[in-house]
Image (cartoon, rainbow, N blue to C red):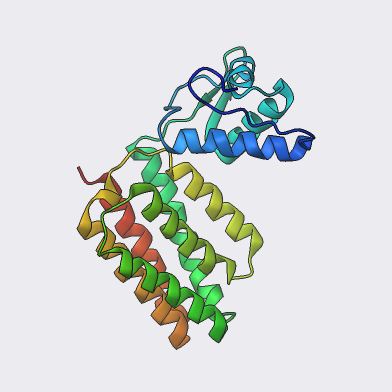
Length: 225
């Protein structure tokens, strides 16, 4: 049985509470990223629980996590709503991301192994192969995030990685058709190649410059009308 809106129930027989909360959180994140829950949409715990056919507790915990992640804002007496990200806030988010991504690439340079490099090159080659296919906004955005998550992880700096993940999560709130344009896809892949080449060469300064330049370029392309 499904609820109104054709959203399938997330509960399975014997579902663990923590797992159910994570399932609800994934569902709500996907709906926010896909625009089904637009900026300013109320995140009513009773309403969401009824629609998703789960109890209120996992929904309440999931909404609280959305607030922590910056995807929702909470106002006393008004409750939680999906956050909005305007041009000015996007600039602020990317201003911080530019600095932190540069630092992550610099720190990764001294940690990266040959196996790590081969994995990064394979990610770049996969993106290059997909340039021959039609654009897919969600797929291309996810591949971009996967690439950056891999580079950041090589830094071995968990607080840095956590901060960057939160910034990336927030940037999903900004509505842009950037990944629909062929030139933007090609530029992103070329910039990824530059980052990996610097890591491979052991050039920490160039890796930092390449990562910062990529973040700055993505911001310009996101804002371009």
